[in-house]
Length: 352
Image 1 (tube, rainbow, N blue to C red):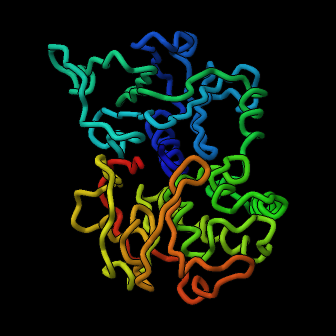
Image 2 (image 1 turned 45 degrees about the vertical axis):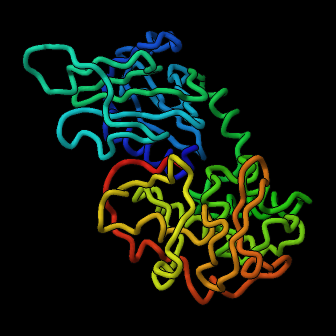
């Protein structure tokens, strides 16, 4: 399932591609018949909250965002959802964002003239097609695709925990995270996967954040200090901001990347943005513990373990991650700055 940074990149892509434009909308698959209600309306922009995407539509570009006339398309990609973009040169930074997809699989109509993207016939699985002046975007396989009014949109957002990628000038979102964790007996490893506690985190960020904090995944949330949780939040904000900018999750410090540079991948593999580019940090160098079960820890040599926790596999080093109720000093000595070394490259979105 795409993690939160992916959805924020997706929102930015829609802002650039369609923001303020009259667009054509359709549902080639037929399962989103409400698309006809939006056809010809203006897409006012795009908004990401955790793993949820909201696309506001209005009759005209000057309609206020909070107007009752605005219709919000709410999309959650889930495990299999994906957006595929096609258009004029420079139309979209990414070809596809979401679950792994091959290159464009649409058939082509034999039409004369016009840009190639205008000839793309959508696959029968396309739930929603959005087409503008310079390109189009096709949605396939989402968990949710629905039209909401302003009150229904807010109800979805109110069910979510704080999003590390949304502005937080007064620290309110950080405090919400700290308070939610500290009042719970649930393990921190499970809490980090609860979208009501913190929205946008997936399995990679969970595993890597806990390692960077030197924290045992099984410690109850209420046993952690506010200071430790505040530092974890700041580390998460920095890591996810880098992911939103580049499409890559990179959590290793430069001096650790060539230590035990291996990964135990599934048959599909852990794909990241720009994997084919030789200038980026390769995925086997990007993580400390994620998909490194049975391999030696990069720092201490202890075998990395894995177990089921909160319906997903958690990965950890039993020696490095021994902290249960106090703050480890490692991240203070090695500040979170993988983006200082990793190059921005490629545009096929991370899809683990």
